[in-house]
Structure formats: structure tokens, C-alpha cells
Image (cartoon, rainbow over all chains, first blue to last red; front, side):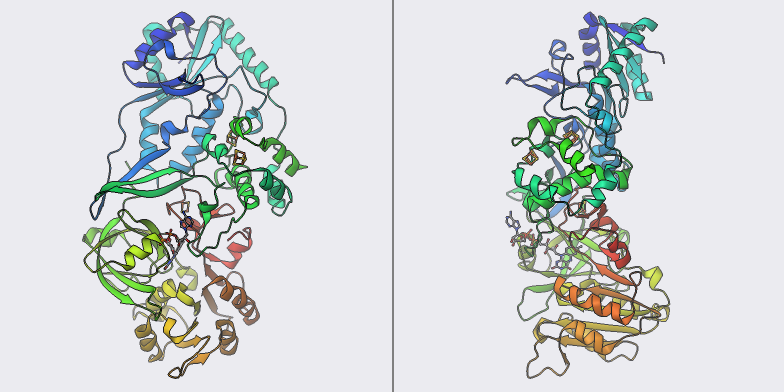
Length: 336
Length: 280
Ligand SMILES: Cc1cc2nc3c(=O)[nH]c(=O)nc-3n(C[C@H](O)[C@H](O)[C@H](O)COP(=O)(O)OP(=O)(O)OC[C@H]3O[C@@H](n4cnc5c(N)ncnc54)[C@H](O)[C@@H]3O)c2cc1C
Ligand code: SF4
Ligand code: SF4
Ligand code: FES
């Protein structure tokens, strides 16, 4: 299908048309003034002129807390899978890349996770190319870029007074067909303009590279950088809760009067209990080992196991760390 | 759609055996409620499973029975925390969830036709019991050369599987050396730590594979002896433990370097381990 276009003033109509077929999740202002992803109740809530949301879209596919089995007396029983179509509208390419990273773990490594698989199946991902990189962004260093498609079914480009929509999968084609009445064909001029804006955005992104970082990390197991970062880090876990690719979880039982659920909830390698053995032994006893694990997992083990970084350069961990740990400088130091 | 990999098979607690004087290790015999679940739970010695009781969570345990023992599965569990205490307080008839089998078994293909040297200490003997019972089974015994077992505990009262040990010592086709750190009046066997008895026994390494399981301190002093006897990194097999939750390579806590103990292990050859960081 060719690139389609819709004038800005009809975006609300498009959202309404999508709402008729699916639950639409997109960026909107929350009560505290921050920009978050949430269910779009009325079309004018959608905010597309934004940098990036505080929380990543990973909870759409991998909720922070999810029942994986029901507990009924002595029995552990199955629970129904989630249902109902979703359109995830307006995420950034970095977060789309993060969906591909989660796919590696939950979809492409056997056994599949049925809850994640179902949500991926139910969801059409419409991402917006990025023309507003922040100073903390580094997608271009981690196999990404402001116009990359990654897991997106439709990629939207911004041009003067209109949005250009490009399908990249069958799901994407179907979505555009369903709103075909609202769409026109994009002009060559508009496409060129939008593509130039993306190229310019790419040039504004931090130019540092991570070539050879996995090899450097392999040789840096005993480096004292881990001791220093371990002392700076307070182990709050903010970096992994905000990270679009962090996928570690805990499983626990929640029961009241014989009835309850076996629940999985996001967990974090920055916490000491994460790896504590019942014997009291802890293979990652201090923050030194725990921070090393964070860096190794994302920039070394990811390449070994899945042929990709488990970081998409969104910069959330850098912007929100309470003690200003900057992943980029850690990696630069390891490489030099 | 794939089946829910977090859903355990329901099993009935069918037998409870107190294993030691401390009374903090018990062997639990579990029977599947459904024949199709028993069939789906096709395992080999060295694998593990997640056991669970609603409200008390799940925990991983090595499978102590052998697939040649049909009709039940065995787990020997030390009482240390929330789940294990509740299991210890349970009576026969209670339902226990069993999720598995998980992880990789001992390298049975590579062990075919070889002499087996099994070295174990403390309560890590569980999957070793499984391996020995399996190899001694009349259908399998011909697949292996000599079988030498060296098993140690702190005191005679801490030795697991006393009736199995008695039965094995009466057989001609297995060389069993049981040792304790400290004996008592009744004790007539070896006295001394596992590495010392291994060195004295000196099983031949040229056609053999060694499986070594035990507490970290035993492993530390046993591996140099294993080296001295001539076992190579390829022919020495260890079984590791790490804290686990999912058991299927997703929850991200059990890794050593890029490998997950739950799916790439818990059994590793020393050759495989030499490629990994020493973080366990
Ligand atoms: C592959 C594998 C095979 C295994 N095989 C066996 C086996 O055959 N037999 C066997 O007995 N064990 C085996 N284990 C070990 C077994 O899994 C643990 O003993 C078990 O998970 C303990 O569960 P629990 O709920 O009783 O203990 P938990 O309650 O989880 O914890 C035990 C201890 O951890 C500490 N702890 C837990 N939570 C906290 C907290 N919030 N704050 C502070 N401290 C805390 C406490 O000191 C507590 O006593 C195996 C483990 C693995 C990975
Ligand atoms: S956000 Fe910063 S302080 Fe908190 S765990 Fe991450 S690196 Fe450490
Ligand atoms: S590690 Fe930091 S920059 Fe990389 S994806 Fe996670 S939050 Fe974004
Ligand atoms: S136990 Fe979850 S990844 Fe190994």
C-alpha cells in the first residue's frame, strides 16, 4: 500500500474511527500534568506533539502485575487470556524497538508466554517517527533511529499540516483500510519533507557509538568502574521500572480465605533479594555486581542470546535516576 | 495458542519419609492425579521441577526419583523457608502442584558406554540418587561400564536414602563408598571428607565421566582431585543452583553470564562453565 495522508484537523475523526473497533491507547496528559500512555476516552485527549512518555508502553503487553494462575482451595487453575482489540497509537520508534526486544524473550524463546503472545496478537502498533530527540536520546547507537519501523504495523510521519501513514504489516494495512474514507494519498513533496525532518532529527541525536561494546564488557568483568557505579547507585530500581525492555519479574501467591491468584509482577536486578538464595548465599551480593549485571545484560548478553541490544536508547533511565547515573558514560568508559 | 507454562500438574502427596536425624529433610512421594499428566511429565535424571502450594508459592527442587520408577515422583526437601516449612507441615492426601520437568538432564547420551563416577555430598544427593537408580535399572545397566559412587555427609544421621544405600552396597555391579566427617559407635564405614575418599578410591578416568554435586566447599576441594585423576573439563559434570522463579528463561534472575541455569542448566560440564563468569 502507498503512503496515505490525513490532514491534522481530521486526526480526531481518525481516533474516533479507531475507537469504534478497538480500545485506543496513546499519549495524553494525566492529572499531574505529566505525559503518560493511557486509554484515549475522547479523541481530543490524544497529544502527539510530545517528546516521550514517562512510562514506557511495555505494560500494554506485559502489565506491571498480572494473574497467571487462579488459586482455588488446594487447586491451581488456568485463567482466561486477555481479550479485545487494542490500537497502540503514537509511541516512539525507540519504544517500538523495545517491543521487538520483549518479543525475543516472551514470543521467540520457547515456551511462548501466552499472555504476552495474546496481547501482541490483539494489538496494532502505530508509531510516530521522531523529530524531537532529547539530549538523553541515543537510539542511533543501539540499532535504532528516529524513523525506524521495528515492531510497528504503521509508521506515521509528520509533515506540514498533515500526517503521513505507512503500513508495514498486514495488520497495518487492515488498520488503514478500516479508516480509508478519511485518508488521501500522500504527495511526493510531503513525503520528502517528512523524511528530511527525520534525517535532521537523526543528526541531532548524540553521536556516540557502541561499536565493540560487548567485547569491551567481556574484558571488563573485574573493572573498578562497577565498584564506583555501585557506590553511586542507591538501588532504587527506577531505571528498570521505567525501562521499556526490562522484563524481569517475580511470582508470588496472593490468597484470602482459600481463594486467590498466583501473580507475576515486575522485579528488578538492582534489588538484593532478587538473587538471594534460601541458604543466605547471594551471587550478586553488592551493588557492584548488580550494576554489572544491568550493563552486561543489556549490552553483552543481549547480543549473545538475541543478536540485539536490550536497550533502545530512550534515555528514561538517564533522565530519571535520582543520583544521575548516566549509562552512556559508563559504557564510554568501559569502551575506552 | 500455547498452553499456560505457569500451570502446575496437580499431584497427591502419597508418602513422606523423614531422611535425617535433624528431621529437616523429608522425601515427598507425589502421584499425578491424571494419567496424561504423568505421561507429559517425561523426565531424565538431572532435571528439576517447581513445586507449589496455593498461598505458599513455588520453589524449584531436583527430581530425586528415576523415570524407571513408574507411578510416582520423589523430591527430597530441606526445610528452610516459607514454602519448604509448609510442605514439611503437610500430611498425606494434600495436593501439591508440580510444574516441569524443567532444565537439562545429565548428559546421558555422552555417558553411554562410559564408566560413571558419581561424587556427592550433603543433601545435594537428590538428583544423584535419580541418576544411580536409573543407571542400575536392569534395562540400562548394560549401557554403562563400572559405576563408582562416593557419597559423604557430616554424620551418619545426615545420610539420605539409607535403604537405597543398603541395597546398593549389597550389589556387585556398583562400587559404593559412603563416608562421614564424624562417625559414631555404630559407624563402620569410611571417615573423612569426600575429596579424601575420592583420592583414595582413585577411579580410572580414561573411559569415565564424573558427576559432582554438593555444597560449594565440597566442590571446591573435590575439583582439584578430579583434575589429578585425569578427568577433563568435558568429562566432568556439575549441577548448579540459583534463585529461580519462572524456570523457563523469562524472569531473568538465574543467569550466569548469558546462560540461564533454569533452561541451559542446571547441569553444566566444566567446559561449559569455563566460558562463563564466576558469578554463582
Ligand atoms: C535447580 C534447583 C534445584 C534444587 N533442588 C533442591 C532439592 O532437591 N532439595 C532442596 O531442599 N532444595 C533444593 N533447592 C533449593 C530450594 O529451591 C530452596 O531451598 C527453596 O526455594 C526455598 O524455598 P522457601 O520458600 O522454603 O524459602 P524462602 O521462604 O523463599 O526463603 C528461604 C530463606 O531466604 C531468606 N528470605 C526469603 N525472603 C526473604 C526476605 N523477604 N527478606 C529476607 N530474607 C528472605 C530467609 O532467610 C529465608 O529463611 C534447589 C534449587 C534449585 C535452583
Ligand atoms: S535509577 Fe539510578 S539509583 Fe536507581 S537503581 Fe537505577 S542507577 Fe541506581
Ligand atoms: S537502559 Fe535506559 S536508555 Fe536503554 S532502553 Fe532502558 S531506560 Fe531506555
Ligand atoms: S528462573 Fe526465571 S529465568 Fe531462570
